Length: 194
Image 1: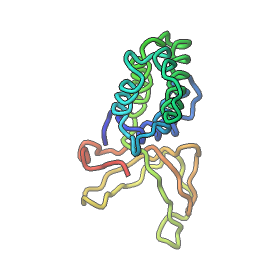
Image 2: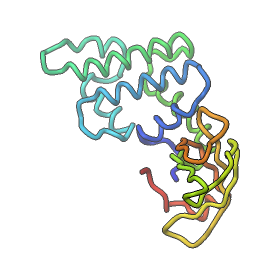
Image 3: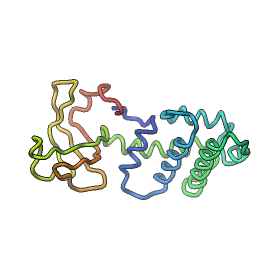
Image 4: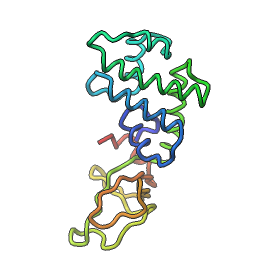
C-alpha cells in the first residue's frame, strides 16, 4: 500500500478510475502510452522510464531534443514514445505553461493523481458470489462497507468499496473498485500489486 505513485500499474489504475475528463488525465494517458511503447520489456517504474528517455533523447527533455532524434530503422518504438511525450508537453504548455520542463509536467500529473491516491488504499477487482456460492442475494451499492479479511492475517477490518464506472454490483458480477480500509496502518507494507 504505497501512498505515492511510482509505477505504471498504479498510475494506470488511477487514470482508469478517474471518471472526469480533464487535461491532466489526457497528459497521464500520453505518459502511459509512451511507457507502453518504450521497447524495454517489463518497464513498470516511472522514474526508470524517465531516466531511459533522458538517456536516449538527451537533457533537458524537450520537444526540440525529442525531434532531433531521427528515424534509423531500429528506433521506431523510441520515436513513438517520444511523440507521445511531445504531445504531453504541448498540452502542458497550453494549459500549465510547462512545455520546457518535462520533469515539471510529469510531476504535475503525478501530484494530481497522488492526491486522488491518498483517498484510496488500493484498487481491486472484486467478484461478488451468488447466494448459491455462499455470497449475496441482493445487489451491493457503491460505497458498500463489508468486513475485509486478507489470507495472510487473522485481523478483519471494514473496507469501503467505491465501484469504478457503475453504481451497483449484482451477485455474480466482477467489478473494479477503489478500496479504503479502516485499519490501513495495520496492513502497511503487507499488500503488493497483483
